Amino acid sequence: REGAEIQKQLASLVKTPPSEAVASLDLSSLSNEELEVYGHSVGVLARADQMGNEDCFSLNEIGTYGLKGASAYAAHCHNLGRMDEDIMKDMHQVWAKLASPQADMEGLLGNAMRVGEINARVLALLDDAHATRFGVPEPTQVKMSATEGKAILVSGHDLGDLEALLKQTEGKGVNVYTHGEMLPAHAYPALKKYPHLVGNYGTAWQNQKFEFAGFPGPIVVTTNCILEPRRIYKKRLYTMNEVGLDGVQHIENQDFSQVIAQALNSKGFPRTVDPPEIHTVGFNHRAVLPLAEQVIQAVQDGALSRIVLIGGCDGSQWDRNYFTDLAEELPEDTLLLTLGC
Image (cartoon, rainbow, N blue to C red; front, side, top):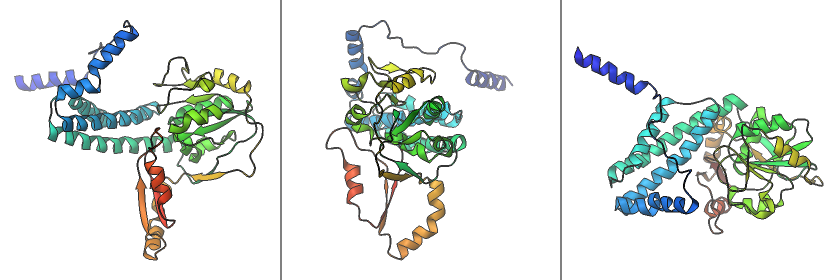
């Protein structure tokens, strides 16, 4: 009986949220030089030395970067009102393992595999959250060239931020363009219903230093994938959420009033490019899977030679174009699918 009572007490302690912080780290009083010293003490080289095994530390880093990405997508889920306690529990367990300096090869390999499994669950949750909030994505033609008028560019992943901007710019005479990972937004019914969401500008995140410089209006970066800005566009750049850079204006509480004011005072695009360049997006799994029988038939008939899934992304260095090169070199009778952002 006493054991059962202790078990109840322990369960209560575990399930009851703490009334005060259980841990804290306040570095606000440190100077830049002191922050740099502290950074070295917890940086990659210091942690690698502490673990003392290159292979084990590589597995630790794979898990760390992978879970950072999954955590970013989980934050999007949370912003859309969706969260899974089991996912969060598993994330905390993985982080606890990654925080240990123990050179546990088998445990760290299993941990890295677990990150992949968690990431798949998080993306499934985010996919459902997006479809519930913005409608099921559908194949949609997107204009990839300029439309005459004042303009705002939105980059990143956060569709909720884009929706807030579209609402606030409605009727203001300002066109909104997507950039980079925001391109799929055009496929969602609740977003593409806004006529001033006129198209996509530029290509991928790694080209932003050149593309942002040529955009004739303010630029909003909603999530990560931001590079140190050039002076030519730094005063037109805004960050949101967890993203921030020294000297760059930061938006709080989805208040885009300053961005809109700057757009109205900017040049905008002087003319519409005609004929426009068009890309089609929106081939979500809900649109593709019903075509499975037709795809199988195409393979059997010899119309399709292969199906390739690309789940990676190029880098900002000039020679990190592997995935682009792969896509361009594939034969015309290839069905090419992409995964992730």
